[in-house]
Length: 349
Ligand code: ACO
Image (cartoon, rainbow, N blue to C red; front, side, top):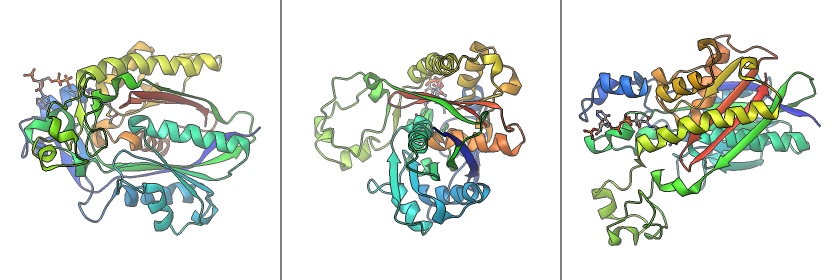
C-alpha cells in the first residue's frame, strides 16, 4: 500500500498588516497585554471586498499545485477546511473548484476549526492509501476579520485571530523513508460551548443547560438570526480563553506522544514539531513538556496571529521555505481547538 506525501505546499496572507497598536484604535487593549499573553505582534486582515476565504485559498492552492509540478486539472479531489466560509452553504470547496476552473471532481468541506487541516490531511491520507485518488488538494483558509467583535466586549478573542490560507497537494509515494506514518484524531463534545459561535444556528436554546451556553434570553434562540442576537453580540464567537488554554496544554503533548509511541519513536527523533498557532505561550509550554529544543519547534504566530485551519499549512510552508525541512526529516503536526477537537499527523518529509 502506498503512503501519502506532501508533494507541494503553499501559503497566502493578505498584504494588510494590522499591529497590536492598530487594534487599540477600536478597543481597550495594549501591545504589551497582547504580546505578553499570546506572543502576537501583528496579523494580516483580508481586503474587505476583494478577498474571501475562498480567494485566499485559491492563491495558496496555485502555489502548492505549481510546486507539486502539476496543473489544477490534475487535481482529483478537494478538501477545504475553514470555520469562516464565504457562504453558510455551500462550502468553500465548490467555490474553489469553480474559481480554479477544475474538472467536476469531488469537493469536501471540513468543519473542525483549529484541527481542520489535521482532519483534512487524515481524510486525504485514507483516499491516497486506498488508491482512490492520486492528487488531492487540501486547503485551510480563514477570513476571521469579517466576523469578530472589535469593540472592547470582544477583545479577549478578537486580538488573537488573523486571516490567511495554506494549501498542500497530497500524492502517493512508494519511497521507503517518506510519507505520512500515522494520523490520530480526537474530539470531546462535552466542551462544545466553551469555544463556539452559536448564531446563526438551529439550536433554538436546546443546549442551554450546558456550561458556558449563554442562551438565557429565550427569545434569542428561537430564530436562526435576530436583531436581539446582533445587539447582544451573540453573532460573534465566544471563548473561555483560560479553559481552552488549560485543556490545550494537556492535549497537545498527549496527542504528540500518541503519534510517536505508535511508531516506536521518541521526542528526540523529531526534526520539527509544527503546532497549530493558537498562542505562543501554549506552544512554549508544550515544547518544555516534551523537552524539545528551539530548533525542533516552529512558530510564526508573532506575525500572523491564530489563523485556525490555515495556521498549520502556513507554518509548515514557511518552515519549508526557510530550509528547516528536508527529505527524510521526521515532522509532527498537532492541533487543538474548538469542539474540542485535537489531533496529530506524523510524517517523513
Ligand atoms: N486586552 C487587555 N485586557 C484584556 C484583553 C485584551 N485584549 N482580553 C482580556 N483582557 C482582560 C480580561 O478582561 C481580564 O481582566 P480582569 O482580570 O480584570 O477580569 C484579564 O485580561 C485576563 O483575561 P483572561 O481571559 O483570563 O486572559 P488570559 O491570560 O487567559 O489570556 C487568551 C487570554 C490569550 C485568549 C488565552 O486565554 C488563550 O490563548 N487561550 C487559548 C486560546 C486558544 O487556544 N484557542 C483555541 C484556538 S481558537 C479555535 O479553535 C477557533
